[in-house]
Image (cartoon, rainbow, N blue to C red):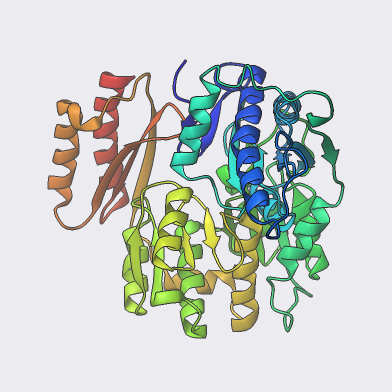
Length: 470
């Protein structure tokens, strides 16, 4: 068996290794085992002095694990397998149904659960699925804990460790998770503002936000034009949502909406459209929010965290405003890790993962949209005007399907092609080539002074990668 965890949990074709019900059950058992031991340890050390547990072989308290999902057909299969695994190890499963990834993180934290599990392959098509795990504090598990869980899943260590009788766990389904999450996000929007008179086009990608996202904006007073809110298990991310923002962009212009909001399948990323139907990507969202936060004096250390994929134009625009940009490794979890370590409160990715650590623990598309709407309401400016402060350089990103992922440094022909592009750009652009951590894809990103030039340079690298790794 191969390695389970990638850069964002476990992901793959549903019902094929590693996304089989057998592995899902094993993950549920391993998570419950690891966290049950920690729960017992914490509970015992928190007992009043002199008080001891009644039975040494009985847990002082059960671990509680929240389980949420998006709208994929295979979610039922994976959910049931995870719950069975959790209960078989003596922990309780709190099943909340479809809810965005940031909602699962929030419910985990607010219910003081020991962990949260989100069943989703994020922006991938319906036939894929994945498992993301959150710690009790709502943050994604650190690498060392994932490694501990993976070792247990791939071993037989739990075969002889099976609780019996009344020590088997229970499963509870709670119906108010959506309401809890809606209230938490509405509380983020300033009380002196509302969305009365705002018309917005909202595309939920037929995904996890299809119920909750419209409620958030409507309860704040907006008129919401809905799309992507009819999931059937097969249409998640299908020509809609953050992966295909042109759909909501066209609708925004046609319906004369003030803003278009496109979420992805699990609701942790967002791409916007201005009132003219022009797309506003993650870099521009980060930029306009950072400028507003600095003006309010709430941008910690006057710094923003992004990744190497972010446009150099964002860095230039922020520098002009006295804001520093630092780059973390690609992946929202690495952005968050750097933010927490260095004490920053705003970060994100060009793809639309926006993290506001003052309000949440992971990327949240609806939260990011609310932050942009706050800037619009306070300034009285349209989004088309606000985005002008972030002038992006011409950039192209091309994805190449690959059958293997050797270290790129050990591929001389690919390195030669990259060096050729860098020489052509000199100091007027950037070249960034990497493998996706969640798909069999190599990504080629190039920035430069003109669109045709960067496109041609990218095509040159793509051809070499395809011939070597395709």
